Amino acid sequence: MPAQQLIADLIEAHKLPAHFSEIVEHYYLPLCARIAQLKKSKSETLYVAINGSQGSGKSTMAAFLTDLLAKIWHLNVANLSIDDFYLTRKERKHLAEHIHPLLMTRGVPGTHDIQLALQTLKKLGSPNKSIPLVRFNKAIDDRACEDKWTYMDGPADVVILEGWCMGIEAQTEADLYTPINKLESEEDSNAKWRHYVNDQLSQQYPALFKQFDYLIMLKAPSFDCVYQWRKRQEDKLRAKATLQTHLMSEPELKRFIEHYQRLTEHALENLPDKANVVFNLDETQKFTKVTGLH
Image (cartoon, rainbow, N blue to C red; front, side, top):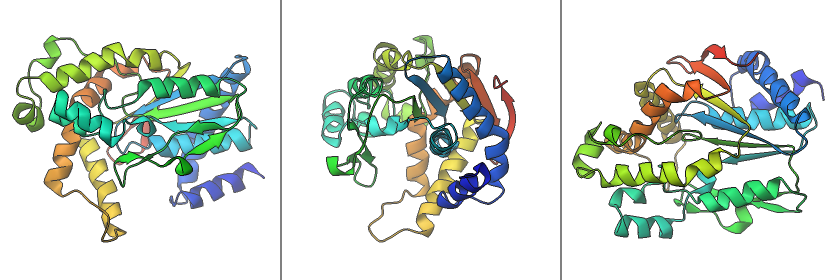
């Protein structure tokens, strides 16, 4: 299939505007070429991480890279999200009861099954058949039933793992002292939750992050934009919601986003220097500048 037709089909499948083809041609295709080049120079599986705040376009980028690399470069690609490795609802309930109530909310470091993620990456790097790729069902806030998981044969040529906290380093003890929003000041006044999250980030997550050969960052201009982008996602869900769909009110959404604020701002400040390539976004989510791609 010609590349232009493939791009058009992908844009239609993802319900994106026709002009999205410019982003694919100017940014995604050169990025694919870079990844394919890196894979060519590495005999084993190439592991690629995508970091970006909520609403920055991580999952869209990952989906396009997966299909373009598979259909134009003929590579065997696994597409994963760190969201799929969330602890089960029962496991998070245990953390909420024994460590801190805020750990019931999925998302922050400490609410992922890092061992499962590491096992999956290892399997994908070996010639295993029918490797299970776990999936999480956000509608029920729990791990999806196994019949909803996907399976692929290894070894993968490329593994892409996208997630808002990919590559982020832990903060210093001094950074944790002062609450940065209403959630922290009212629901974590003794800083127990943020210390636990930070400890998990420093102790458990480096083993996952060091598996990756290449780190891509989608950089928001500010955390204020993240709230607006996430609100736009919620508005879209509201427009096509059924009676069974739980949608967050504005206060609920604001509180939810505050779980991510501390580490998102930390990443915006520190991660660009560590990422291999950085796509700078403006308030409308358009790419304004790319560093490290050429």
